[in-house]
Image 1 (cartoon, rainbow, N blue to C red):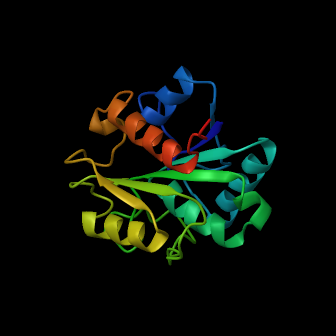
Image 2 (cartoon, rainbow, N blue to C red):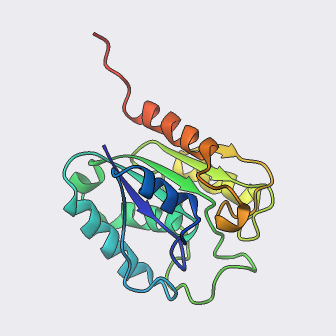
Length: 186
């Protein structure tokens, strides 16, 4: 199983849980974007499609922040055979493009697709995220058909949140993998 790591705007720095997970486990591979500071939805969706095409076998998407919206947009435009390779999506701290803190340099991410995702997914939100309210995160989770977990008051669930390797997040990811790829009975 491969894990495609998708940071949000600005990329995930050296102390972000996504980066730490990549360093710890070679199955985690980062999707590269041409421009991390001025994200364009069309360009980011294209990069995600190329990354998925480059990895054989089943994948779990591991998205943070703006990349959660990227996953929702990608599912609308991708081919069914590509969507079928994605076994699940771990969506942490989705941002609200209608919120006051949404980055003005990000273009094309609104409106957010509110169709069910075609694979199991888990939205993880914080009660004091400056980029989205719990109500917003719960609303997109419901629209996407995602399970929703509230992590408590942990900011944007990023480096500044002081999560380190974020073992609780890794446990949540593992719960999604168990849901997405159930063990076969002998």
